[in-house]
Image 1 (tube, rainbow over the protein chains, first blue to last red):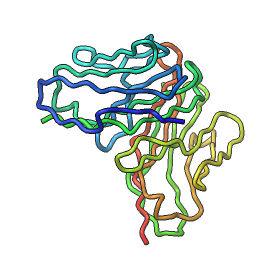
Image 2: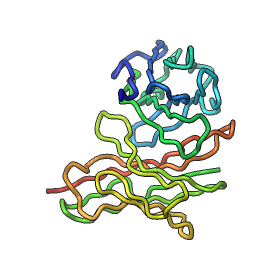
Image 3: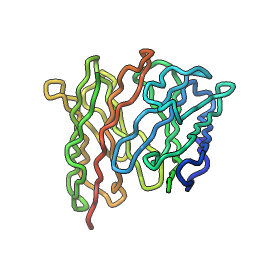
Image 4: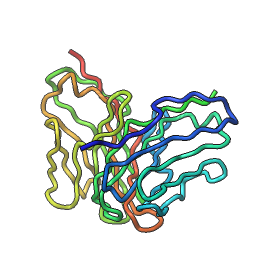
Length: 116
Length: 116
């Protein structure tokens, strides 16, 4: 079974530029998550999709971050404009069941963003 | 609200020694708890999870964890460390998102170093 795919793996941009990350979840998984992992910290949830609808974006900085999940499969996370504090690893995860708190989340390898 | 505290950001053991990584949680709902491992430049991989069945949970790679409600703890152990266990370990509690769906709240992580 193929895992969660993410691209690019690494990205370096200057502040105030824009950047986009792509995620392809495990086939058949209804729920997709984007996390931000700052160096030395645990991952923090940015946004959660159930199929192609948003179920939780309470911690997404909506003035600069946006995300979409077209057709309930792939997802794109965008930052515009980027700030220095956005330097982090952006992890995508997916899970089979939309609402179960016991469901396992499967993580992709992440995209490491450096903002100069 | 839910939160996780991992005691010790860095743990060092000798190969063959006992591994003990500490995790304490706070949860306003019945807790479901997870341990994930992250190897360098990789995503997170599930080691084990507690979903209110047996309090002693066995996971992959010889790891196990015991849920102790009275101590609000979910410590991770392995009887004999191997060099390949060197990685970062995250404890997480499944909380409730803004739509009452599952969301993981992670601790800050513990880096395990294994000395030959």
